[in-house]
Amino acid sequence: MWLCMGGSSIKAVYYAIYACAVQHIAYDVYLIYAILGGNNYIIIVLIFAVVYLLAYFFAARNLTRENSFMPDRRSLFPIATIVILVWILSIMDDSFVSGFESGDLHRVIYRICDALCCFYVLWVQISQRELVRLQSELTGINAAWRLKKEQYEMTEDTIENINRKCHDLKHQIRELRNLSDDQEREAYLNELENDIMIYDTALQTGNRALDIVLMEKALYCKNHRINWTCMADGSKLGIMKVEDIYAVFGNALENAIHAVMDLKDEMKRVISVKIISQNSILVIQIQNYYNGDLRFENGLPVTTKKNKRDHGYGMKSIRYTAEKYNGTITVNTGEDIFTLQILIPLPEQ
Image 1 (cartoon, helix red, strand yellow):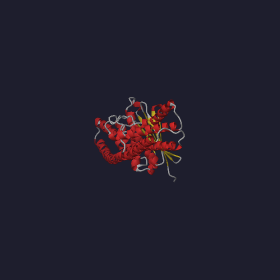
Image 2 (spheres, rainbow, N blue to C red):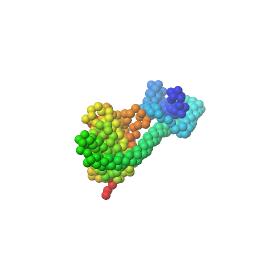
Image 3 (spheres, helix red, strand yellow):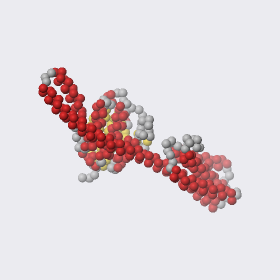
Image 4 (cartoon, rainbow, N blue to C red):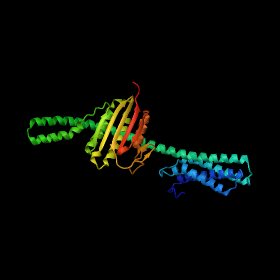
């Protein structure tokens, strides 16, 4: 088992405890059947087969699904102690009591308690694995959130500088145009002015943080031939913290950009952003075309990136942030269009 676990002694002990607990449960069920007078070998074989199959389908299959799982060594000692004590008591029971007395209620009760102890060990192991998984996801979400916050601060400064320089440059171009009537220079200046116009587009949605996120993504889309449509009323986003706004829209728009970048048909390289309020509900909807088949897990699409350990937290971060404000998210994928919709209840005025 140590070799199967890649040389990890912690994992070897963890799975050995699980195997011993399952085997002991099957043995207890067999003894209960024997004490009650059963001696049919086919039923005995079925008892072991059913217990092992149930253990596989309800726990073992999930325990081995993630190779990156590493048990907590501090929790191994108490559950290993329980298994060892149960094992010793079982040996003592088999040694001091020979044969089976039909209807021996005390031994039946003992074996039931013995099996329940092993069930408890299995429950602790499965719960520990789920706890480790949730802690790993939370660590990834927190890391992504910190990265988004830092990126937001840098982007805000960058866009402020760009807007200021572009504003000055526009005035300089106007002055140059007044000083020259040369057609070639005029055409050049027109082209230059059109090129920088995108950088001087002042988005005013009613929320400064949203303006910065949308401006950053609009610049990226412009430079990568991605069409962009936006109908956004950001005045209701005041209920959200700045870092949460950036986390939600940053992750959602990055996913949309990543999806349309893979499309060969430039007519489908379109991203639509819609933010409105209806009946005291803030509605955020982001749509884009996509290519390929998406696999869902717990209602969210699973990342298509190769490095699944470092990616895939974007949608979870969006859902976590939405639930933070008592909101919900839904994902639809009909007709090759990916639709992310976030609904957040607005406080009463």
